[in-house]
Length: 229
Image 1 (tube, helix red, strand yellow):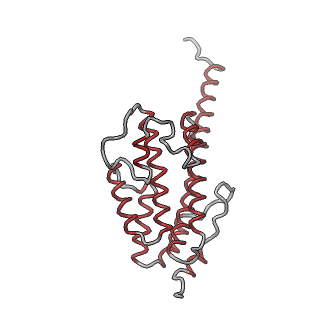
Image 2 (cartoon, rainbow, N blue to C red; image 1 turned 60 degrees about the vertical axis):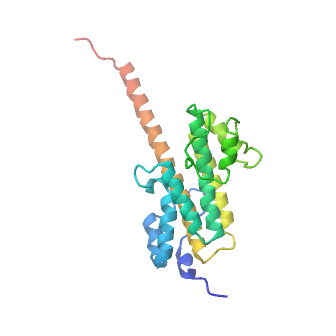
Image 3 (spheres, rainbow, N blue to C red; image 1 turned 180 degrees about the vertical axis):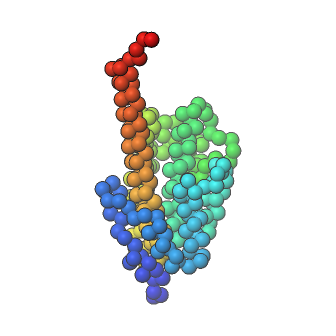
């Protein structure tokens, strides 16, 4: 049996802990410094995965069709079944989210363009466009609570649900992969979830802080009304 290529790399990476733990995740610089030990081809593949998974890394102005074509090409080029499933799962969630958003905006029929989404469930979604769960209720356990959170306009709850589903899937897919390229990528994907969770928490805290400030200003105006000249 050939030796796993990235034993030292994986051994050098700090533990991630729990998704909703109180620990501060390792910095991006700290993580990517270790990735310099990847082969050139693996670095390129990781970069492609990162660009697709992390929406902020998409080229500015990318269309749905361009993202779909990138996802399709990436899945075709991946040799690891676990990484194929990881990318496909991310695109499943995104496509279902896009379908919900379009329908909430009043779109009564599936999009006419062929590359509006990329999912193993695409045809089912299109064929059941008018149904509350796109025909997926009995197939995907997270679809029911996800729709409820969307209808309740609860972005915090929805973000928590999505992060949890990604974390569970990536953790399951990492089983049996410890020191190979698949292990490296799945570690990076889980780290990305931790970073997203911390960043999202900061954004929520900032919005709440600004809201408190605005409320305070309003109260001050009531307590100290402008005096007449």
